[in-house]
Length: 76
Image (cartoon, rainbow, N blue to C red; front, side, top):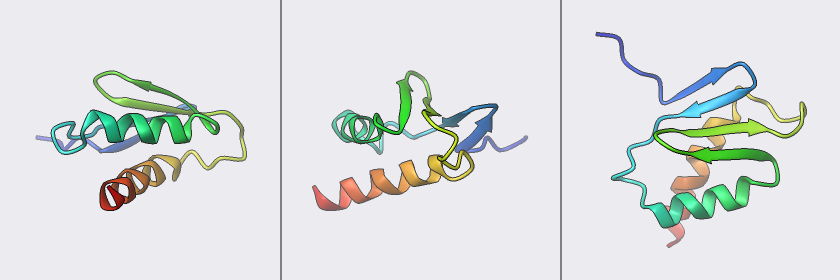
């Protein structure tokens, strides 16, 4: 059985598969709010980031989002 990637680049979007039981919705919404200046963000079954400019590295922004979430958890 193939393991699903947690961060997957699909064209001009990054799809993030989070365990939403670990990340509460308040922290998710804080991170989304903080990233909205650099990415269009959708939350449904997955978190989808679409960078607003080509200056943003699409191959790393998903991991940066993950790290940001962990930082928020640590500070709260």
